[in-house]
Each structure stands twice: as C-alpha cells, then as structure tokens.
Image 1 (cartoon, helix red, strand yellow):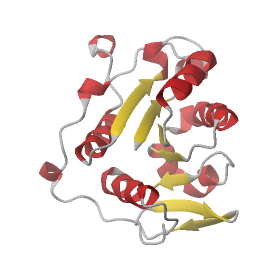
Image 2 (cartoon, rainbow, N blue to C red; image 1 turned 90 degrees about the vertical axis):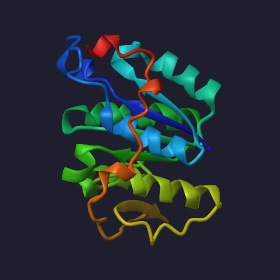
Image 3 (tube, helix red, strand yellow; image 1 turned 180 degrees about the vertical axis):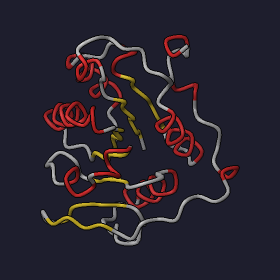
Length: 185
C-alpha cells in the first residue's frame, strides 16, 4: 500500500514563515511502523518543502497514495482540512487524521466530510491495524482500538487503546523520509 503522510502548513496560520521547532516526530514514528510492515511511505512537510496546491496535486498524481495520513495541532486544523479537501477533489482517497487536535476534539474533527478516519492517541499500533483491514478490502473497523470512523454517514468510535508500555518495541523514527534535517536545525 502507498501511504502519504502530511504535516500541514503553520505559515498559513501565523502569516510568517516560522521554522518548526523540530521535525514532525509523530509522522516520522508512524512512517517507521508502516515501513516495518512493508508499506511504501512518503512524507510531505508542507512548509519546509514549499508545497502549494499545485505541488500537492502533482504529488498525489505521481505517487497515487492508497491512504493519506494528516497530523494536526488545533492551530493547523483548518490547514489540514484544506489539504484533505484538495486531495478529495482529485481522488476519493481515504484520509486519516491524527495528532493533538484528533485527541482534543475527536468528535468535531471526524465530523468533517473529508476526514474518513481519526486516530485518538498513540497511533503506531492503530494505523497498522487500519492498514491491514484496508488491504484486506474489509470495512470491519469495529475491533481497532482508538479508531474513529464513518459508515453510512454514521460516526463510530472504538474503545481507547492503552498506552504503549514497551517503547523499545517501536522502531526508531524514519528520519530518512525527510528531504533533509537541515531546515529543522
């Protein structure tokens, strides 16, 4: 499965180019677990790579993702929705939202028509279980803890997943998915 992970723009929120304090570690961690299970993963950091709508469309058309994951803090949520809308305008690709905003406003975030799935909390195990169900061509999402999803326009949410106790079980973040670490230094 081809999976595109996106860190939406902060610059569009604050109006000036602000260097991020660090690389998108959550996405890099998700990328690492997805690669470990054999998925083809690409990561886009909108501000660092200077991605505009035209470039985003080009990435979607060239990479042909089967799933798109977008992270969001509350300040970038509207940007995440714009990215989701742009993707849905091109193709009906399933979109999963994660990050802090998915935790603090799960019900509000999943209610948006362009968000198909939402992962509340740590996503490393949840995303892998979701990908397995999607790869199987199934829509049996009811057994995936921490997943919010829609079926027939109805929103469902599953039991929250326990925190990962053995952090050593998670692979090192996939820093190689970044074009360069230099902009974050």
